[in-house]
Picture 1: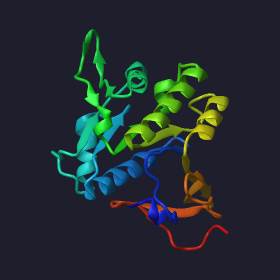
Picture 2: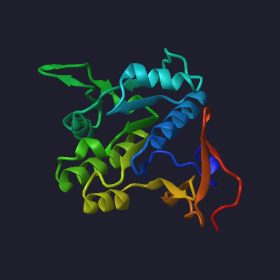
Picture 3: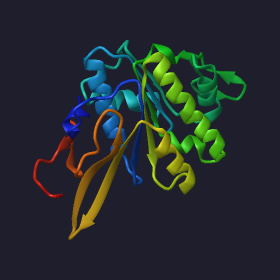
Length: 224
C-alpha cells in the first residue's frame, strides 16, 4: 500500500489519521490512491467528500482503475452537514449522507467499512466550538477501536483556530503532512510524518512527485 512506500514498517489499522496540507489538492490524490489500494485487497471503503460530487469522485477513482460500480465502496458527495457526522459519532452505528431541507438520504451503516475517508474534515467544523471538535475526534477514535475502522481525515492548515488544530494533532493516532516549497522557480514537494502509531518518527522528510498514477516517491536525496 502507499503508506509502506513512505518508509513505515507497520501500516496502522483501526486508527484515526490526520492528513494535512497547505491549501491544495494533494490530499485528495492521496486519498484516491489509499482507496485504490484498499479496494485491491478486498477492503470496504466509505469515501465522504465535502467538496466534490459523487459523480466527480467516481470519475477520478476510475483513473486509478476503480470501476464505476464497485460494491465495496460507498461514495458520499457534497457532504456539508456536521450534525450528520456528529450523529454518527454519538450513535456509533450510522451516518447520514446529505440533508436537503426536511428530506434526508437513507442512513449509511459505517461499521461495515474497513476504511473511512473524510475529505475535508476541517471544513465541517469551521463554525464549531473546540469542545465539539474534540468530542468528534474522541468519538471517531472510539469507533475505530470498536469497529476496526481506519479513519483518514483531511485538513487545510489555517482553516481552524490554531488551538483547535493543536488539539486535533494531539488526539489523532498519526499525522501525515504534505508540504510544498518554492525555490528558484522550482516546486519541491515533501511528506512529513511527525507522528504514527506503531512506528518511530521518520528522521527526514520524503520527497515525492504527483503523476497520473498518484503519488510516487522521489528517490533523489534532497533532504538530510
